[in-house]
Structures are given as structure tokens and as C-alpha cells.
Length: 227
Image (tube, rainbow, N blue to C red):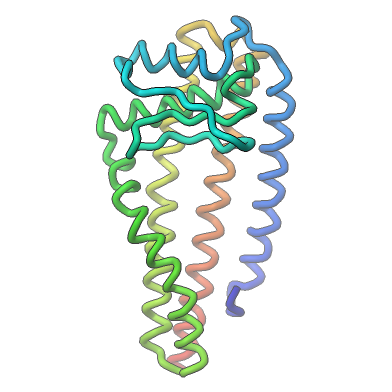
């Protein structure tokens, strides 16, 4: 955390992010206890959705943790957490379908997904260097290092910009599939699946807001160094 003109905004966004995380946890806890209409586990839904989209070679793998679900584009695996893999709930069904949505994006070579994957490694390297550049620029009074740090934070903001359509599209694919296959189970199950995916989407919006606030803050510090 670097003090700057947008420090208050960062604190506000941070508090909002914590609230959103709590909302996601509570929403999943609620719908994770409601059995879906066909009593299919998250793994069952994922396997069926994969097979119906011609992704027979993509395995569904159980991974430890809670809400650690993700699609691995390198290994081509759908990874489901313990609270999703073997649980026949509305929440598990929604999360599993969302992760398969990413596998389908990979199959059709969605440009935003490909770009996000290409950005991942250099972004991690850049984000490790960015704080060092900023601290060096501040303590050594080297404006160029401050601007370099700002540019690296800008790449992080771009990553979040690219992530939003990827996640929204995966949720859209998930909801459409569940509704078409009658898995949403009418208003209750459908609303539950939508609620879980909406809460998850809000976490990505919060991540974008935090990246934007940090970027603006660093820009403010860099600009002030020129005065």
C-alpha cells in the first residue's frame, strides 16, 4: 500500500471487496445445502456438459479446499473443490457448469481467454517487480522508476479488464446449459444458480475496481513526483 491521492478510494474498495467475499460465501453456503432437481453432483454435471460439447478427453478432477474450482487450460482439466465435486446441490451444479464454460471457451478459442492466458506469466513477474520499482522510485527520488511501476500496475488493470468478459461469458454458458437441460429445476433452482454465479461475478468486478484504484493511486504518486 502506497499513500497517494486515491488511498481513501483503495480503502473503500477493499472494504467493499471483503463484503462481496462474505456475500459469495453466504450465498454458496445457502445454495450448497439445497439439492438440485436431479440429485446430480457437481462432477456429474461437469461430465455431462463436457461430453455433450465434445470434450470427452477433458477430465473432471477433485481438488482440496473450498471454492478452489478452476479450469486449467494447460492441463485441460476441470478442477472442482470438495464442496462441489461430490455434492448434489444447486450451488455445486452452478459452479461446475461455470468451470466447464471455460473449457468450452478453450475449445472454441475465445480470444479473451487466450489473451488472458498469454498475460498470466509476464503479469506475475511484473507484479513482483512493481512494488520494488515504486519503493526504489520513492526513496531514491527517481521518477522513471515510479512511472515504470505505474506501467506494470497498468498491465494488472488490463488483465482484470480481459478477465471480466471471460468470466461473464462462462456464467452465461453455464446458465443457458442448465436451463436448456432442465437442471435449474424451475424458479427456485434457477434463481439459486443465478445467485451463486452473480455473487462470483461480483468478486471479479471488485478485483477490477481494486486494480483501477491502485493504478490511479500510483499514477497520482508518479505525477506528484514531477512537481
